[in-house]
Image 1 (tube, rainbow, N blue to C red):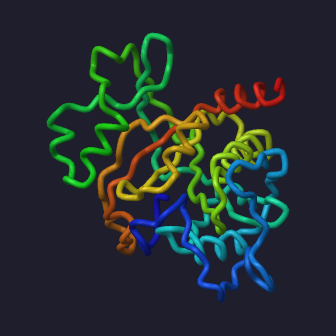
Image 2 (tube, rainbow, N blue to C red; image 1 turned 180 degrees about the vertical axis):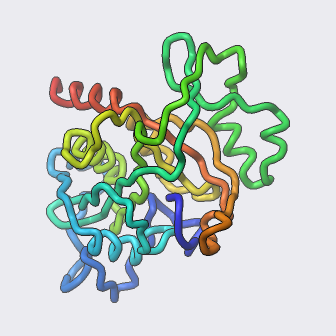
Image 3 (cartoon, one colour; image 1 turned 90 degrees about the vertical axis):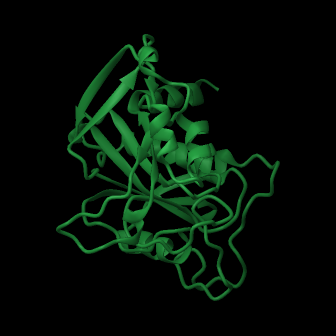
Length: 261
């Protein structure tokens, strides 16, 4: 999501590059047939589970199947989750974010809103990104914002990688919801964390954005290309990215609704 090498710019689905039939990742290794998946329309959410996995296993999944990232993970990781539907089908990694502070914008109902951008801001975006930006974060101006809050970096955790290794409709959304619930309830989640964040490469058109928005995440703006002067050049840092945030309180709220159902 926010580091490493761009390997593809237009994968067909959620963070997914399909197997070529000779894959040796943990999902497909030693398999005589593809892992079992549920067809569209068949209820399956009760059979999706989240289990901790090693960093090595997560890296192998990302290397083989992530739509635009390789398997080289930053060492400051908090947890790696395996996404299971009978068999392992994907992975999610959580880590501390790089930034030290983040300014958030709220309306009078204390709802998280995107940063208010000007028309000039939108017009300054590349032509292939501007329409998507307008659909994600337009309609918010200074008059829509009641108050702001600056949170320190220890109040955020980043969902740094999300990857599905087999095509399965709605698995991404379902497993993301279960993973974020599993994480905030686990000892891996540092005390005092108030928000989860993630980044989506702006020219990536999969089901990622739909899955996030359906599970309590808000696109709060975009990050511009920026290379760190004291680190090696990374192609992914040359990309615009959408920034999404999800209040941990909303994760707990969804957990309560799930239990009630």
